[in-house]
Length: 397
Image 1 (tube, rainbow, N blue to C red):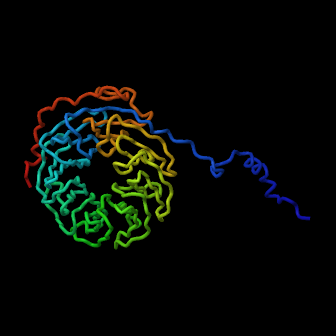
Image 2 (tube, rainbow, N blue to C red):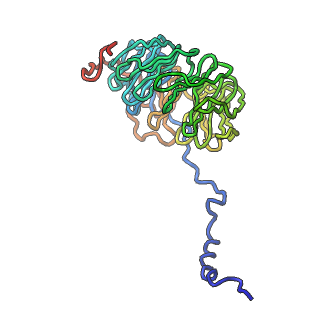
């Protein structure tokens, strides 16, 4: 008769008994320990201005930049909200990265300011009027509106300009070799990034307001439209793939996170679709979104009309809280380090720290408690002299 257990199995019997006595592992379906909550946030600082804030805010690694309706631009300390410098007579919308700060007015004039001082580097008339902020693209800046122009960040010189098609209504989206824009007549246009020459177009039914979301490694993009759809489109030829019908227009950029394609639509829903086009989850919003979804510590934050911030688990769409700001939100939220920064209708810029992340000893000028009186901005200081070795006179080339 064969033995019930071989000698090798019997020799491992103590190990088998030990394994049977161990607690269930991760395969048992137990969820990992929950992450620390990020809501409700706490006001870290609030800076009062003397005029209404103009969207959007901009930031680099050392500053938060804010423009106001009367044409003043300020640089704020992202840790305290202190006004570091102020320049007047530069109306328009801001764009910034480390090394560059640009102001674009609706007539098509673009002014380059030194991020550390506010000194004017150069100013040019691009001949492309429109309300969209400049998009920074490597050593170039893209100016979109009634036409599309690429200009040099060094001196504002025109690299190329193209007036093909209708007015551009979405911020340009650059890829490695291509450039994508949405137009007033519903056209999505793909150009050669180096020359501006049109490569293909895709027509939708209404003016595009949301820029496309590009997944270059898969050679495709995702487009939220003003005719209540989310589309998959091939990047190489503009050929449509799957489509998903939503309850209202999509007017803000989307994001790719954890394998999901996410768009916030005007039906007050945040949609998360799988890359293949199936619905992963949907998150109800308290009202229409006023900005694109923002990733904050692996979660998805959406600012909604008029004064609501809501946050979702990016994997399954579970709500992780909501928060009401002290006044109506006037700018899309941006991140400055670990702070969420907003411009409000009460002529202020406010920074919120995530739950449990507020510094123990706030510096002067911060607002550590909700409802505390904010510190007004410091009086304007005389303009800092222009560094002669770096900056160029206005209009210089």
